[in-house]
Image 1 (tube, rainbow, N blue to C red):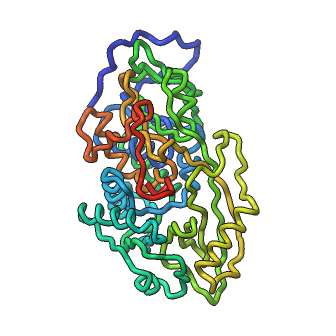
Image 2: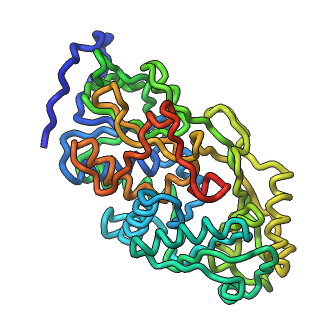
Image 3: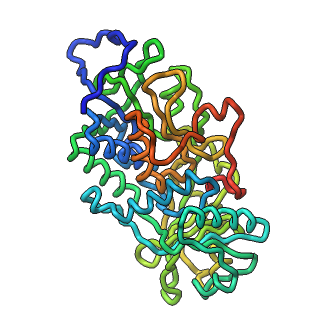
Length: 409
């Protein structure tokens, strides 16, 4: 179905001669997992002409370097519902898109010291209320999941047997390909230069490839969101945090790691990777390092490698000789409460945001496509995300999870 152009827009400034001018019913800015998921869901419901613009190539930004953990342990019902629906969609990904997201169900284990157990139990109770299969496990039961683990300092854990991990680049590429086949246009290597707004109404997007006349824009470009919205007088409190990941090769006698672990007691996480290796990093209570989105060290720091290695060796002393293979740094787009900004921007008709995911956007992205498509279409979304409105920051209604580490949600 075709959507009419919003009222209140005259012709934006006259284009220069030979400048491409296109039209669309909705423009999505950002080709990561969230933007491509939304493009796919809008295209499959035949929501007029959909154009996605991406400054590099689809999935080439932080999505490509996501650790990819898909788990449901959150403190708020909308996040649990988004994560649960997303896990279902990851399981159906090939049927849905004709592509693979490399989703691997291996189980997710959250370890906690005594002080974190009340919050952990409350989150598992919330999951049970929503019909999700999970359990609070004792140290003895944790040892049964992996007898090689040193459980000193662990008071208990939360176990999700059906959770796992997926590949960020494959997910974004799969959504983008399916969106194209459903009729959407995907403009890669095309930077969005500015959003054109007249009399508080979206009128278009100026891109490096030309202007797109449109009444609706969804901004899903992560760390680059503030610089795109600031000229409109919209303050989006997102900072770019440098986040490091290391890959460790395990001793041959140890064997592979079979489950994902997020360890609040030691402040680190680890997940299986191919070739008897693991990917590991830290669970910070604060941002690791605030950096410019386009200028930061994409390598890994020696002291970070040492810190992660010490945590791994403590939890798995039988694999203390694990070897550093490689490492990298990417970005989280973090907000003051480590929760996302979702939905319409008050005061500008036709402008929507999906950013500030603070490290847990990938695991929510399949369901977010459905929610965002409904919002753009003027429908009631299948999951209520109104608590993540942008105005909460100005109102002082920040959202805090039950655990000290903000990334746990």
